[in-house]
Length: 491
Ligand code: ADP
Image 1 (tube, rainbow, N blue to C red):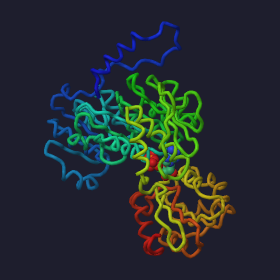
Image 2: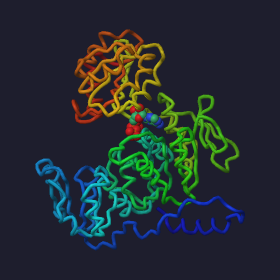
Image 3: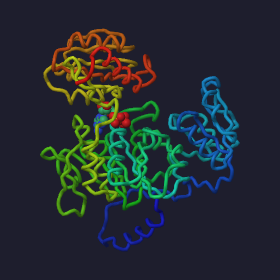
Image 4: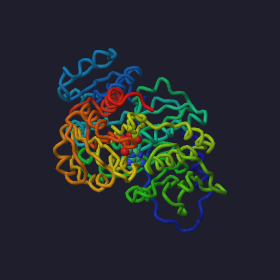
């Protein structure tokens, strides 16, 4: 990530600094001694905690680089055996809990899903063994690359995918990694000097990182989520704020000007701040006007207009503005932004248009796993009670009363599925007709019986999928198969 070049720029910036009194600055980041430097650690051994996607990728990478590795997981042996069978020889593994063998390792790598208060982490801390994130291990083995990070409660995958498309349109070699696509450690072998990494970084990954310093970052929004993992809203916010904590001053961080939580986070940001928002306030660098997105970076004489991607909803306009700012802040020309936006078709399972079948517009929003996401989906629908909404699955805390107002304005019928069915019915009683369907297959069948020409069948379940499906992607794929079965060919 071009450290030498940065140091020079920093010196120059210091010389140019005006003499006038300044506002107190946010605290300086600590010295770089806690960055993961492979040469310091000999051949390990390294403990990798968690045998999920990122843990397995980290173990493989470290083994390839000559480290001895102990891969350790709490799940029972029998659940891990299949994954363990494919591991290289240098990797030993243990299941059924983290044994004290972990404490004989020189450093540890934590998988994002392990809670930060897990006893094994306390033990490592007490033993003075440093813990690194999978993300930082990966970056330490890469040649200098440009790192673009996207975080926020909602919209990360869409924004990261769109941002990768924009860099691609600017003829850059791009890798879309992190939560979306491959684990970062898995990509190390294919990354070349000067490539762009677009990373979808969750609060879990950021919380674990020690000195992650992307070249551009965006914080899309901030609503309570994963609070059980982080321990509270303050901890969740602090984890997200780590995305810019170590960024160089000359780099830029993109913020949502219409989200009060994000705006207050921006106060502690040292790098350049670029805001996107509904209206062109003095500080705003991207805003919508006359059906276009206007971009104006500091120093530009006038704003540049770009047509947004053809995606529904204001939320997607926000995602697009964030992508555009990330790219132009790295020198991508607005023409490349426009080209990528024109070609972008959205991401599967996020308000994905599945064609008109038997007169019904069909939309797959299986990724909507909470009430907030379903509200976002309903916000894109007309006000004429023409939506047949499939709701349910494994419920999240809080119930469904938050949907009442939108449902009563827009929804003709609610079709319930899965474990949450009774709660949905109780919470939405009187807001719309509720049809208990139990399964997605039954819900789709009923929708085609009830639906009239011009109405919309929307799967936006506001629940997790694990009661009836492997994950939300499985649920979305099954929905599309059912559409083919009951609704015929799309028009
Ligand atoms: P993430 O990766 O953060 O989960 P996705 O891009 O997969 O985000 O979108 C998940 C859901 O979040 C979408 O189906 C949509 O309902 C909602 N969403 C997307 N972008 C935004 C946004 N900018 N603001 C609020 N909600 C959004």
